[in-house]
Length: 102
Image 1 (tube, rainbow, N blue to C red):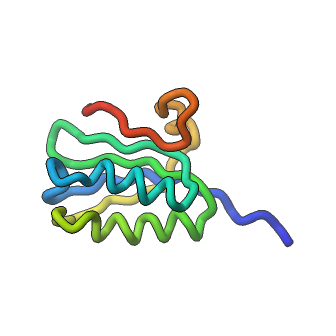
Image 2: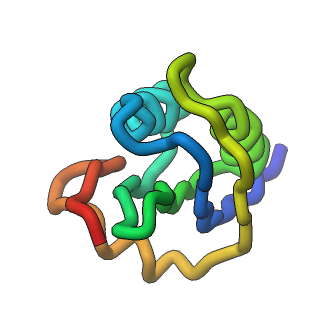
């Protein structure tokens, strides 16, 4: 049996997604699926996420991000394939990091 296809996705989540626990929720959801990557707030009010792992798990994570935590309201989510180089922004030794606002 072959290895599952690995993918990297870059997400930009807009709506009421700051001040509602979205980053901590996204970190927990990513870790639960064993994904690599990071999440951070953007100055303009969005949340930015990079998630990497087996395609099925990343797609499941993206589906969850469309809902977000109970206090969030996701109005739009832009998703694109990304380079694994974006993973270099993680904190050393962490599979998935919550980064500072950019």
